[in-house]
Amino acid sequence: MKKFYITTPLYYVNDKPHLGHSYTTIAADVLARYYRARSGDAFLLTGTDEHGSKIEEASLKHGSTPVEWADSIVGNFKGLWKRLNISYDDFIRTTEPRHIKKVQEVFAKLLESGDIYKGRYSGWYCVSCEAFCADAQVIDGKCPDCARQVSLVEEESYFFKLSKYQDKIIEHYEKNPDFLKPSWRAAEMKNFVKSGLKDLSVSRTQVKWGIPVPGDEKHTIYVWFDALLNYLSASEGRDIWPCDIHFVGKEIFKFHTVIWPAILMALGVTLPKTVFAHGWWTVNGEKMSKSKGNFVDPNVFIDKYGCDAYRYFVLRQIPFGQDGDFSESCLLERYNSDLANNLGNLVSRTLSMMSKYGLKNLRASSGSGTPIGAAVSAFAPKFYLAMENAEFGAALSHIWEIINITNKTIDSEKPWALAKSDPKKLEQVMSDILSALVLIADNLRFFMPETSDRIKKILECGEVSEPLFPRLQ
Image 1 (cartoon, one colour):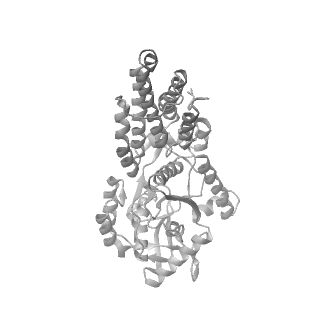
Image 2: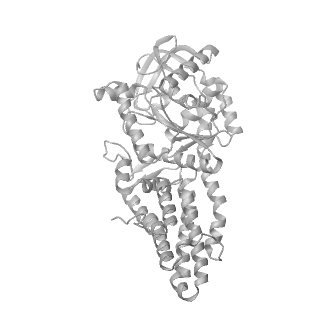
Image 3: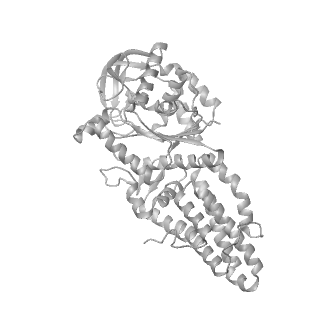
């Protein structure tokens, strides 16, 4: 069976990883862990985009070569992914020989087929976004996406016949409604394509840090044409294509749902099944930026709250796909209420009661007539549906429904009273509670792998040595 193929974008190595990078990658990791458990296997690809003028500028600013600069930043990404328990199967860099070879092969093939041709480019270019801007988009000399100054560029260039695939892209959207997700983002892409596609400049002579055009090395290949092909480069020799889902930020949705499918159509390669664009994070209500001093370094919050608490917060705080706001006060509130009070307290008091009432060898089994049995029975279908629709916040809320029902059942059934009045009923109730804890641990492993393992070990040994989540001030 083909592995379920999941990708993050290739992250640009102009600076250290931040909240946004971690958000996309945690989501991809959660889905990969889910499909490994459900269908036997998954393949998670992540990596770094290391070419282009921004990398040249960053390396010069720091007194290093582009390769030295990229190496240092790649180390930051890999270090963070290790701390966040990201279970990637491959980490690809656009400076690797396997990728360069693939990009040049594709460029040569499309040049031969006539889908790439030589001409002259004249227009606006945003260095920050590594993107070309139409005249109508540029207001006061600024990029429509990032509001930074754009430059007027005129040079010889190779072009990709993007316009040739306009109708085919629209047809693909119509025939494959799952291609554009969330569904409410589809209209924007459809309208963009229907408004008319122009051929895309795919080489530069003024940018030296890039993959040379084969046979014409004064040209380097446009960084986006280069970067998108990583998904194919990594699939070489592996039974994973087509990609099942590309996770991207909404700012690069257009590249992945317009340019990327057109390239694949030109190559005669099957298109990905889904491109899912998530929203942006603000920080305390403001756009995140170093100049504002609100750059969110995930390492800071992992140090303070732990890996699993951070993973939990970013996927629970907002519906995946929408914009949201990050604040430490909200993180602390969720940590104390959801993790310390609800989950942590449930585990500790359950094990305490089992020890106190001599039930350490009791087996988990739902169905004693408490609300837990019904909740456990109804859990799987709605949880699976949420996971397969990348509704991670909803999936977590289903787990927390079980946690809340189990806590309420303890309060209503009063095991401490049953221990005196009805020992048989006590065993039935506690067995129900154990079944809920097993379900919670089994399904938290996708989101909070360390916590899941700790709960399972606690259930095995029958005692809690320390709180799962000590309350914080």
